Image (cartoon, rainbow, N blue to C red; front, side, top):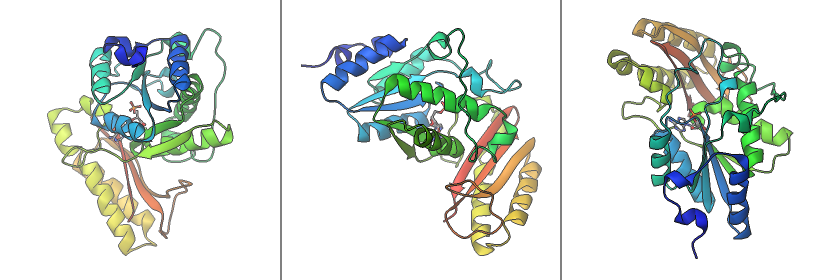
Length: 291
Ligand code: AMP
């Protein structure tokens, strides 16, 4: 017999507080089901949906969460402008096979008097870390809460936010949170631009230039293979090229060890190229393996 949750209509697939979430999870557990979690901030696109597909390949039931987490936005960032369309998001997530969408209120994540911050060192030191102070504390804290609220077997995160993926791996290892963290490949538009909720901020002209970030990172990866001891100069040239193309600023182009994120001057295998640059008001990030 189908469970209550399977009989629900799309809007009823939403749970808005931890008690209802736990009730659904407990019922599934009683039926022997395994559970996957896909945390998102909404503004759902095909990249997010690929995480749901990935989660479904590991688990019987998939929960997607939608929470625009204020603590991971800096003061001058786009928290107030972040696109919100819950009805559309829930419909898309449901069509992709999500069994339950967890849309917690702010009080479910940060109740009155909340005073815990999880801060992870090491992998947060470079790349986005210095450009977004407090960002990874906000990410680690909210993901810890979501994991402990859902208690999933598996949680899926995109390699699009590769540094974030490593932060979460460290979080669950250091705190012995019993969950398998699965990384999923970056989903791109046909022209190579990594899909992102923030691509909506791009004007037509900016959108036409945005895929250049990916092209430049690919040219860095090729150049590094040809001249492995020249990483610094290759990245410096790439930063200049992005500015010439029309990016307003470049936070970084860097070749880093894919596990530690240590900045590499000499490439010797297992590395990725990372880039972050601003196009108009949108801060775009991307990364690719050096293979
Ligand atoms: P966000 O809603 O931007 O916080 O992203 C939620 C999850 O979706 C994170 O694990 C992201 O890494 C992942 N994600 C975002 N964009 C993509 C993409 N283009 N391909 C794969 N995963 C993505």
